[in-house]
Length: 198
Image (cartoon, rainbow, N blue to C red; front, side):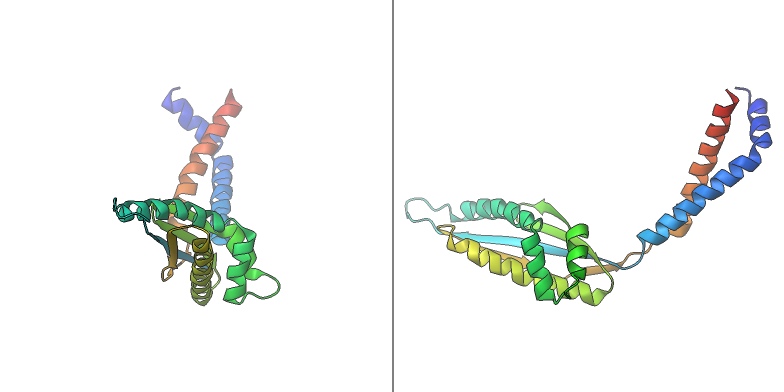
């Protein structure tokens, strides 16, 4: 298409493109505003194990300890998907009867395995004090469950430690989002106008 014709079409439909772009920018700002607020909390979870071989002929304690910890870290990551475990964390953190932490933890909690013996739990809270309470409760509940699991694991003894929470304010970048929305809205508006010309 000739640039003169394209420019003429844009000029003729500039009002529509401007309004459409404005709507996209407004939608992006509303989304940014709703997505921001509160605090993001990240807690590292380390899994350790001690495996005692019953025989003295081969000494592979180190290898089996790492292997057992790797396998057990998969179990720990699954614990976070259990409402029972999340409920225990909430109870220890002092959640009220309405289950404010429970709803927040269970719906927003993301756990990923970063290394064989290392997990990271991410969630959102309304204020930093809540993040510290939940992290402390998480450490208590995970250690308690690891102790229970060790009783039924034969020669393996498991230890799970939740580290100190790293808390950052959840703040959207309104300027960047507005620029992206402006470019996207403007180009999409032109595309819609060109489709109407066909």
